[in-house]
Structures are given as structure tokens and as C-alpha cells.
Length: 99
Image 1: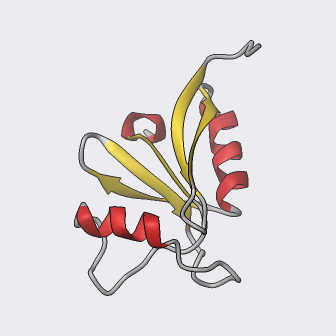
Image 2: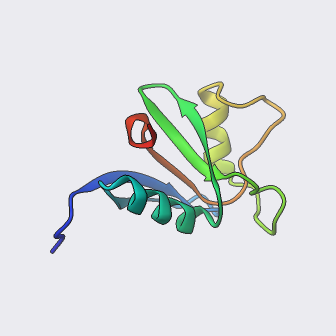
């Protein structure tokens, strides 16, 4: 049973699997959890519908592989250049959760 208020988000793993995760309502706890999930400092990519995709700011520098599912979503939304890609784990959540 959850004792803390939570926010539902969508997790996209490097191999393209999509799952739902719960993030804390508290800003500081949510930031720590997002950093843990993506494996470092976060970068937000704006998506339509007042959503954003959180990725590892330095995901392309490490051993992360291309996340084809997250890249396709970002391309469809015209959120990244057609020659760009998303590397590593991505999390989609309401944009208001990062303000």
C-alpha cells in the first residue's frame, strides 16, 4: 500500500519495453527517482499534450544503447531533429511535474 501521493508515468526501457511506474508527488523525491531511473542527470524533451520525456542528459556518452521506441515517439512529436536519437531509459510524464 502506498502511503505517499504518487504520479503515474510511462517507462520506456532501452529494449523498447513500455511499463507504468509511480513517481513521488514530492519534487525532490521525484527528481532523485528520475535520476536513478535514467542513470544520471535528467534532460526534459517536450512532447505534445503537455507531456515531457525525461532522459539521461549524457545518455549518448555512456554505454547506453539507442532507445528505438523513445526515439520514434520523439521523432513523431518533432521534439528532436530527424538525425538525432534517444539513448538509454526514457520516462514520459506530465510536463507540470518538472516545473
